[in-house]
Length: 308
Image (cartoon, rainbow, N blue to C red; front, side, top):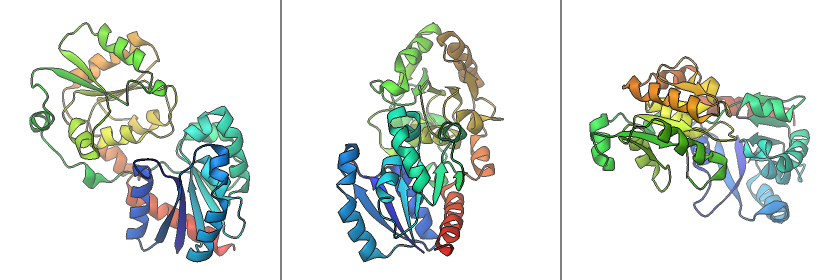
């Protein structure tokens, strides 16, 4: 099986959840090749059509797998090879982009959505599945909390809350997170911005803090929630993306209204939980490792290629 992966290529490269998914597919014997989309905007994407056709001619893929709706739109401008498109959230939650994503949905041989909320918004009629992106368990080895704090230079005396993104990312809604921590009325609690860390440092940080806080306006299937679960970090989140499904039944994790007082009440309980959650068990039980997701994708590729 040969898969051409069409994905946005930014300054730091392809999105980690895409490269990790491809690595898991390659472990299972799938031959993959990336096609990078480097330009912005609809016109920028469409400029890649000639190069995409050349890549298809040279690589002879059985399936083109596009990540995000605009890449799916580009991939479907050619009709020689069937297209699978994965929608990661921003391409569905943004109404302007959704209109273009719906074209990709209609033309793709198969569509993958990372959350039920996105399916409810997009309302595909056929040939689709709910498959959140997976996670590599080996990237998150267990570290004692005291050792994790030492490695990250954190005080053993303070309480730390890790915010689910950069403070200047408006979608993450940091003002309400800061208000939430203020309402705890505890100078010993500090909110940490998730920005500027390597992936390895994030894995250590999630085992060093006392709780993880998500207040985003929109999400798809946020990888940081799965990372926090694997690390056993207590979670407080508003009902966004697929977070409610991910943390259901996990002790030490709490859903809150998008209200600072309710968030503060839940955050207080999460900090008081005081130990690791059983989040890793729910990741395994729900088949959210990259290896499990790759098996599912391989079945879809085989199914589609047989119809050609």
